[in-house]
Structure formats: structure tokens, C-alpha cells
Image (cartoon, rainbow, N blue to C red; front, side, top):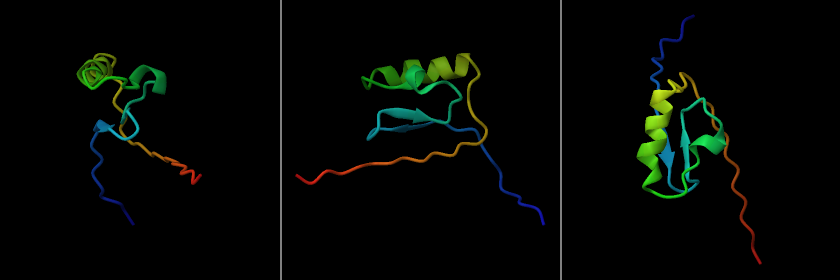
Length: 66
């Protein structure tokens, strides 16, 4: 049996978490503090040829009820 899923390298920005997924760079290098940083961070990823082929992301969000 063969899986014919086509995997495309892709960068995704999450506004909720201020993070760009789809890169092989460390999270410190691609953390976005300001919306104007997004294009600079994406340019950095392309310059370093650091786009991941496959990405698995697990995000845990904790809600506190006080």
C-alpha cells in the first residue's frame, strides 16, 4: 500500500501564538514580537534554506479559571 499524499514545504504564521511554523530554525530565531517582523523572519528562513518538508506541531493551551 502506498500513500500518495503530496507534501509541500510551507510556512504558516499563527497570530495567536506569535510563531512561524514550517521552519527548521529554533523557536527563538523565528518568534515574532511585532507584526512588522513577519517578513524579516520569513526572509531569514528562505536565506538559510530552512523550510521543513514535514512538520508536526503539538500546541498545548492552558486556560485558568480564577
